[in-house]
Length: 92
Image 1 (tube, rainbow, N blue to C red):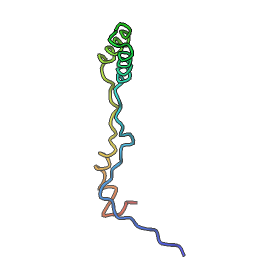
Image 2 (cartoon, rainbow, N blue to C red; image 1 turned 45 degrees about the vertical axis):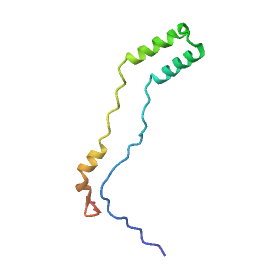
Image 3 (cartoon, helix red, strand yellow; image 1 turned 45 degrees about the horizontal axis):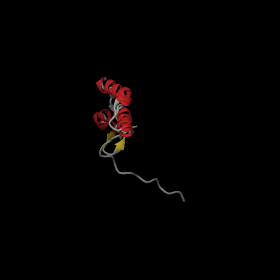
């Protein structure tokens, strides 16, 4: 005997989660860690780390990268919610 399909309760609101919630690290972090490692290995002799210092300075002086445009799917889902779901039933 086939069972009846299970009915789900109506949705209170539609929301799509962001696929990537990761914070991007600064591109200068790797240069700064290299410079700190150079200073740690060379002691107080900073003449050998001059190239890394200049590279870090140019990286810090450059403008930060632009963020990607945000996705507007949640705005449109909220705006069109009444047209998609009517009293718990979908339109056909």
